Length: 162
Image (tube, rainbow, N blue to C red; front, side, top):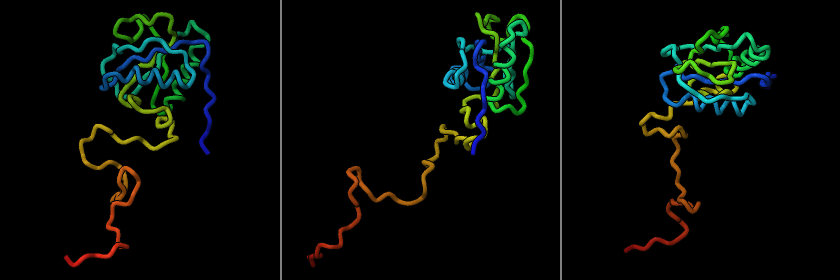
């Protein structure tokens, strides 16, 4: 049975800053974290260049920021992800994070992966951009047509000689 993670999601706003090599991944991760209950700010780009491992920064002046940051780390699967006190400017392209008190500098390790996958609750998803003809299904032939009828030869009718 999967372990349920009790997340602290109240009292801090989280901004995901894309520091991965996948365009648009910060927005998708923001959506996933919002579904998990976190208050999210506008996704942005990171200022640290491309990161292999995600980093999480929190504002030490906000008493709720570190517990929420620790929960974000847990939601992202923990692992090698480390927490750091945030300096000024914030590690984003603009340096401005509005009212947010946590920045997730999202690296290649978490980009475009589901929270369930990151937490080890489901197997990693396959790369859907592969151009091969394997649809991921089994290797049996589907003999049914769109209307659900069997497309094989009906052997109950007599055959003609000619």
